[in-house]
Image (tube, rainbow, N blue to C red; front, top):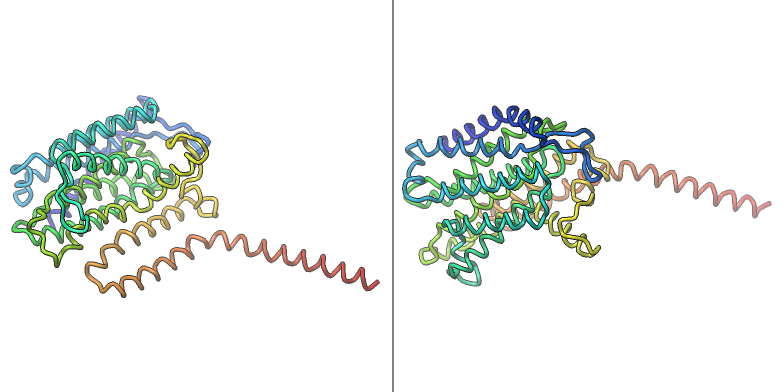
Amino acid sequence: MRVYILVAAVAGGATWLVTPLIRHLAIRIGAVGQVRARDVHTVPTPRMGGLAMLVGFAVAMLFASRIPFISGLFETGHQAWVILIGAVAVCLLGMADDLWDLDWMLKLAGQLLISVFVSWGGIQIISLPLGSLVTASPSLSMAITAFLIVASINAVNFVDGLDGLAAGIVAIGGIAFGAYSYIIARISPSYASMATLIDVALVGICVGFLLHNWHPAKLFMGDSGSMLLGYLITCASIVVTGRLDPATIHTSIYLPAFMPILLPILVLFLPVLDMCLAIVRRLSHGQSPMHPDRMHLHHRMLRIGHSVPSAVLILWGWAALFSFGSLTILFVPAGYAFIGFVAAAMLLTVATLYPYYRRRIPEIQQENAVLKASKQRELDHRDQ
């Protein structure tokens, strides 16, 4: 565990140190986000922060490859290098979008190409929980893997609308999934886990970047960052699934064995929900699924009456509820887990709606007072 904490610290430190340099580079080459109708920020802000996170991730991976406890992961296979190459490609694609605002179809094609390459390189889901343990065919594995990577990339991209929101949600998900993958690794002869390594490095780069990205942000992560985070957290989940042998899974750990299928969905519940709502909303209006608007979850939080920091913190709370709540069923009786989940959800619901009702209740009282006075005048008029 101490080794993983050290890797996370290296990733976070490298990201924190290089972010100011990337900010100056973004300003110099013109990667500055102008204020658009759908944006929350009010002043032009440099983007392309994903490059800083990529540097932090690469430094952490190279550092980990020299640690005896983890170095075997780099010597016995090429998964780590495939993931790193894919991360570079995803970040470069995002940087191109940060600079030139690529057409959404071109960007989607690039994401698919990178996902297929990563899948071809060995990062695949090899088993599916279809009533029993079923090994997927290679072509089906590649298709499912590519779909999950592209979906996660765009889900995190959709939710990246407030300072610190995407980085915080992914960091929370990374902590939850890292804890899970670490527990899974403890049943193997070696505690070393590629999934845990990716997760802790991911958490590190998110925290390191958050120190510069908290409201008011000095630098946006841009598509280069949001796409990178979605890619990495999905790769970690796929690595866990890919290293499970269906023939050796005992029925007593059936649920934990296939939690990698469910947990990424729960970890990224808010981004996935936001993406699905946006796609349905835009298609119902005859628009492209990638057509921008101001109807995302974070926009709704601001309309309710939250400030940017409070909206981010509450959305972090919802992300933590789904991420860690999904893990509690592995360690706590289902009844207790459900009660805790409901109690936490009620508290978060109150916190979410509080600004609306704080503003709306006086308005209702005023409307009732006006209505009462009007009725009283009518009664007085009739008496006369």
